[in-house]
Amino acid sequence: MLLQATMLVDLIAMATTLWLAFYLFARGFPSRITLRVVVVLLSLSIFYFSAYNNIFHQTAGTAAWRAVFIVIGLGSWYSLTYRLMPEHDRNKYLWLKRGVYSLAALTIILLLQPNTFIEEKGNALYVAHMAGGIPYAVYSAYQVIISVFILLNLLIGERIGLTPRGKYFLAASIFPILSVIYGVISLRWSQTSPRIAQDLLSFLGIFILGLSVARHQTWTERRTSLQDFPLTTLSTLGLASVTAIFALREGMSLERISSVVGFVVLAIGAYDLTREFLERLRTHRESEFRKQLRHLENESSGDQTLRRHLQKGLDLLCETLDAQGGFVAVRRGENFTVTATRYSVPEGSEFSESLVACEDVSQPKDVQLASLAWIAPSFEGQTQVAVVGLEKPRSRTEYSTGSLELLAEVADQIGTIVSLGSLQPKQSSQLRELVAESQTNASKLKSMSGKMLDAISASPDDDFIKIVEEALRHLPDAIALGQSPLADKMGITAETHVERGKHLQGMLMESIELLKPAEKRPPEPLPRIWYNHAVLHDAYVEGVQNREIMARLYISEGTFNRTRRNAIRGLARLLVEKISR
Image (cartoon, rainbow, N blue to C red; front, side, top):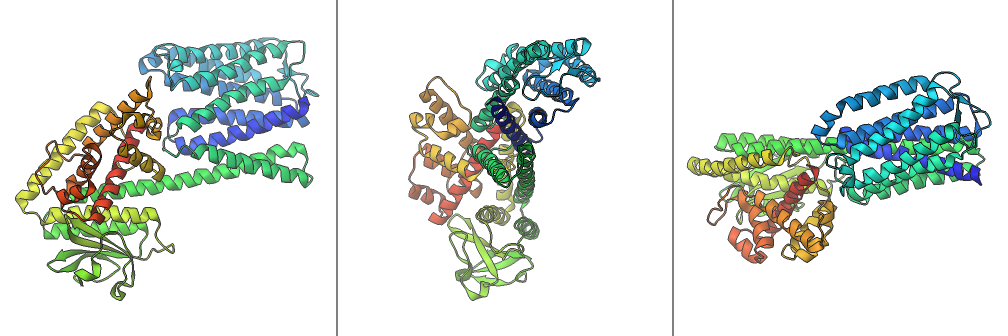
């Protein structure tokens, strides 16, 4: 019974720690704190893998290497808790950190000396015994000292271990420390001590870390849905378990099962890491695209400048969506003239209004536009001032929903570029002064708030956007907001759910105000740069009916719906920034 229990604990612990290491590295890079956690998890994974194999083959010297990985894991965990302290406390105890690292290096050197551990042969299920002398004294002292200092880091100064965000660190530290105490006593105790107790205590600490990741997305740099970690973990460990069962049925020996499970987790982890890298690369490219598009928007003035900027924007759009080509046609009287083109219809070509008129992103139906996959309108008030056409994609059969949303967002930005370009110089200058004023205010806010992510690079997922939209619908109701999933996402805590709702209510209203292009709202009709703020403020803060808002902005229902979607997405990005601070 002890044999089966020890095997099961070591196997589950090895697979779990290995998967956690890959998961956190993929979603937490380049956070230095996350990298420390990854080192801890990899050290424990190797420890459990060696411990499992030791059940079947007791090789002299492997106990020393397992002890080395314990030293590395404890040292990395100490480094993690040290990083959690305020900077003035870190500077105060810098000498202590250097002393701990020096002691860790000395301990590893002594552990790797010959004959440090005795009676390794035949000892499959119990804690290995050490010979007396300096190696045992230093190893034991190191474990005790670093355990004390780990707790010290969490309980001094601001006492991070007693805060809501630090309680998981404290709980996760207690179990490994109990395992250390058990191991130190067992190393020289004449009686045999089952190794499963030490392994299980360490794994309980890892389990608590998993709960922290699942509930609060601890150590992750990119926000994901709350279901991401539980589902990927269950699917990975489930697939590894099914593979192990099939391997056993096909006659594979138990001693090789750890290798099978390890390879399955490694394969899934490597795939997940690659997918995350490609997703970040895509997000970064879209971020750069939006930055350049905003830059073009702020500089549009004059016909030649407008044409040049539209061409740049179109090129960026086609490259980002991997489109074969496309064009931008601007209204000239009753027709739309192609002002910018990329491997599509010639520049200067004209389309009648009936041919390209539409309320939202749609597929063209006329045979004259048969080569196009989608067209997207750009509006100024109720008037369609431009249209963006996209050829079919290069490397896929059709565009994804995310690509079409980006097309709609770009078409909306192009409407602003065209509107700014058509203004008289004096009007354009006045409008840019409003934009400059808002940018100045944003800079002041940034300096007060500290370092934040770029507004576009934080790309919220669809689930988060839906949660934000649902919270906006209950904006006047603090009781409902206190029970909203968005309050959990934003990490809002309070003594009562009503206070929690009031805090979230204030945060949402403050975020809506940050979307204002300037301090003072101009008289109607509002410029396009005010649409996002006006739609959110009037609809959710003032509670104005949609039809009245459409009348205030002189826009159609399709333009209103598109503007509201873009505004909610922008608000969601802003909230993601607040989470990431």
